Image 1 (tube, rainbow, N blue to C red):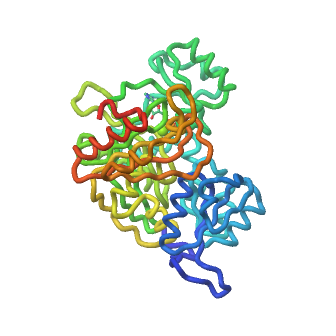
Image 2 (image 1 turned 135 degrees about the horizontal axis):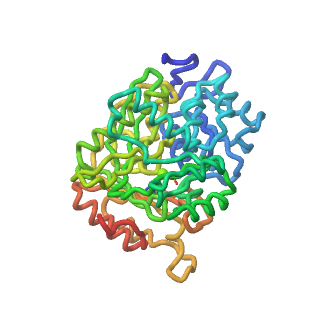
Image 3 (image 1 turned 180 degrees about the horizontal axis):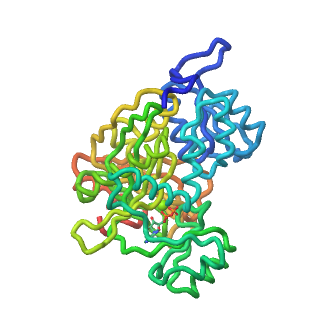
Length: 413
Ligand code: ADP
Ligand code: MG
């Protein structure tokens, strides 16, 4: 695809009518906030659309439009202010992105976001990408069945159990998921999810999990980061390991190639993250299984802010604005520790202030807090990036920081 009219948006320019070059984002969470910071560093003005007056991105943006995501007036205002628009969470109504796209370049586009919003379509897309290209050969989805009707529930093959029932829509951080051992539990779980459209996935023996982040431009050029290895605790990302040797090199290559194929298949523009499982299939390395995709920067790519010369948020800005996409270079091995609200409570459940001075005294620690004033268990409050001269140093510092803060997920690192 060639560059849409209105692009590139040069940073720091002012239009004939006196309007500074402004980039917009749908959603005001932490991903939006880090996008805003990256855009502002380049000299852009920013606009955030999010109904929450206290949204992390709204608090730091030049403009904050406080309406719902489908609000016609709000969307008009955003389009009037912005030269290009992106999104920071996948549950933005695809229709809203489509409406914006009538007058402004929007990246990623509504079609790609719609695929990521629905696990059923996502899996079809992965399968179609695989069929189109030999590159995905050997990278399949977990065996699954679609459950939208009672008949489909009853027809579920026994070899998909034990499995995980996942709602097709609105799932994130392990929400909307129930682990089921047998047909009776499956039926009860589907009833518990109010018979919403679901997929049942076979429970796979995971050796590890990883993700790949790429950015694709309007011209189809793709750049990307090496695969990250991720540790989840209770369905939420806890730790990301980003350094050479974090996973078998052949699988890393294959995951990167698969991600490029998936991005190409929808003509994606922007930053895309694809999550993979490394499944124990008896082989030394394990088999690669594609799990899901996020049409935006991803929690597992936050290390790029401190360990790479170009971060995932920089790439998001470049891609949407029609600027060139430089291939990022990782200059330091890194570990990212997610900081959930749990860190703000002691073992007895009493509120506490984490011992930041002790953490910040450690070499190579980079603290990122998202400006959320209320800590709740499981709520993403910030992250801590740890960089160092070598992997051993990074691991040692990560263990110290985790001990100070009481963080899980480093047991096998
Ligand atoms: P979410 O949208 O909540 O991130 P995921 O599908 O990525 O949903 O599932 C969350 C986590 O649950 C995964 O990162 C993985 O640890 C575990 N999980 C999900 N599906 C499977 C599966 N089929 N087999 C084993 N573990 C799984
Ligand atoms: Mg996931």
